[in-house]
Length: 179
Image (tube, rainbow, N blue to C red; front, side, top):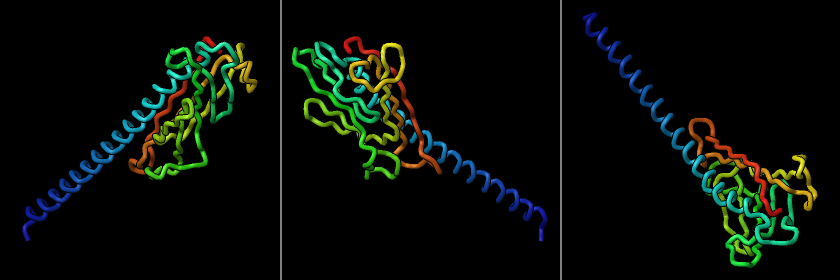
């Protein structure tokens, strides 16, 4: 047997395995990047709407504007569309439900209820938490003492990339002028 042919087969096999490994790594990195982008886009969509609403708490409303404040639900009054009529807005997470359209077992739906009309923001949310603060920055649960609202939202990808779900987190504290 010719040692040159055997050596060529060994080197060729090694190169083929190296190319297959490289291809697999590139495919996994591509899938992970896609899932990270999906999670980031889902957070951005949700945060645009909720940011607009939270900045407007109590806008053009003379009474107590916060009606309900729990870690997973905030209900308030505001004139969102600036038409002189008070709107009732509620943001809530249903942490006991799951989204059947995704494989992620940790996600749950988030709802925005505006004057009785519900919009489902089921976008692979895995964390949706409100924290309320008084004028001195101390956490409070007293509705009339609330002067700031912090929200933390975390979304994960609907599918796994490799062995994990990609995650995007957004957190912000709002100081509405009209509370």
